Amino acid sequence: MLKVTQQPDVISFGGGLPAPELFPTTAIAEAARAVMETYGPAALQYSLTEGIPEMRRWVAERLTRRLGRIVEADSVTIVNGSQQGLDLVGKVFLDPGDHVVLEDPSYLGAIQAFDAYQTRYLTVDTDEDGLLPDSLERVLERADPFPKFLYLVPNFQNPTGRTLSGPRREQVVRICEEFGLPIFEDDPYNELRFEGGDLPSLLSHPSSAPIIYSGTASKIMAPGMRIAWLVIPDEEIREKVVLAKQGADLHSGTFAQYVFYQYARDGAAFDAHVRRIAATYAIRRDVMATALEEVMPEQARCTHPKGGMFLWITVPGVDTAELLHISARSKVVFVPGVNFYPGRNVHDGMRLNFSNASEKNIRIGVERLAHAVRVYKG
Image (cartoon, rainbow, N blue to C red; front, top):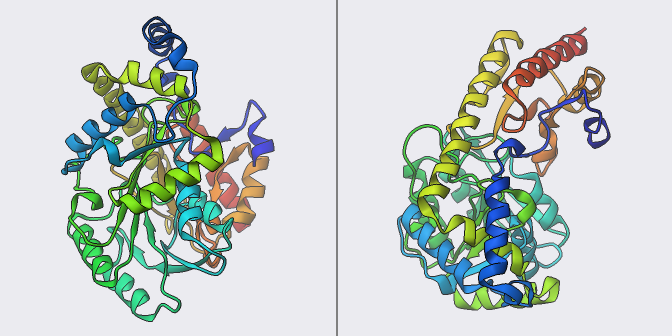
């Protein structure tokens, strides 16, 4: 797929790429200049493993406003992209043969990160409102050995685009509290909401079981900055994550942190920038959903996410891994759904990214995809 996407005439729904035309390039250039004038050599020096104080305070203040609970700056650790956060948590918690509880399907990047520690998976059933609490409870009652943590993406999940409903959020926290199971709440798409109001984070619910929260600037500024954060209220876990990060890279890039902070510190301008991203993605979601409805087989089923960057389509009777070979020849690619199932046992789904392609290319790409389905079915 990666080779195919290098061709200029290929339309990709495959990667989780933001729209590059929305990157605030001029503002970032101005911020970089201001950083050198304001901080000078300090912006180019080694820094704290946990992140520069300004960046940690910004994260704490923004999350306090958005998540419905007070977030202390001391609980924030800046990481080199949220993928590093996944790896560090895996490194701290997991030994070969340990279990992690996942939604089914779940984020491929998390599976890849945890696979590095020879992890096994317990999967929880989901529906249109996300993870099913009853299924989670059954999995934990039967688990042997007991899992190290639950990993989930509650908002506009990658890959399905589904959102965990409000009532289920507290149910999940209470179940994990009852069993003493830590939660890893991965929330990269929180600010990319198109419809409805924000739902309380899992972190906002008081719990005696540890909750680790992950957020990122990749979806609201630019992924090349590699700025993300872990909020870890539990001091013992946080210290272990910081030690693991010291062994990995000492600290995230000082200059990038200062540049991000310089740009984002103007809250009104930054909020306007994020709203522009969300508004653009909402249009592209609608274009893709409409096009799929018009040209895909009648039995195909598609999610309708209220935010984020992905939707999920199921085409009964179609092995989408095989379909990818056909669609690539038609110059359109996607990620086959089997990759998101730890058991690799479901083959008729696919994840489509709507954030990166233009509205015109979305329409063309969906038509090419429908043609590939017709070829597959013969």
